[in-house]
Image (cartoon, rainbow, N blue to C red; front, side, top):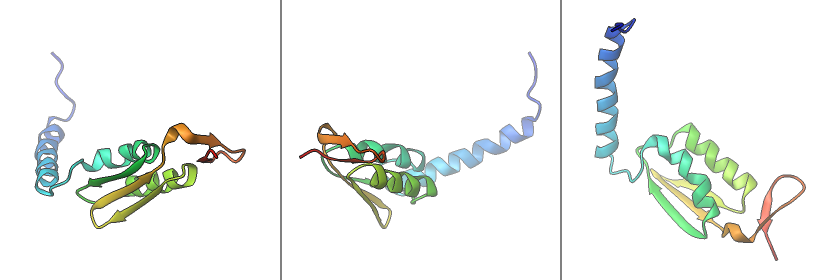
Length: 105
């Protein structure tokens, strides 16, 4: 069986990963930092307000929020460590010629 090229790197990574997981659990977050940016588009397409507590707001979440606000009739903001997404029902969207979406009348 071939041995990993750098076994020391694998051994060092495990404590860092477990420490990160413990910090996420201890933060009281409802989703982890990796999922925060992934859930924003879905919350923006849903009707109503969604709130998610995250360990911290990262650049990926900021960008996903900006894009959701740009392309969908949704409002995304951070309130401390809580992402707040005011979405609109996606069944009532129509695409405009600029690539954005707006509510059908």
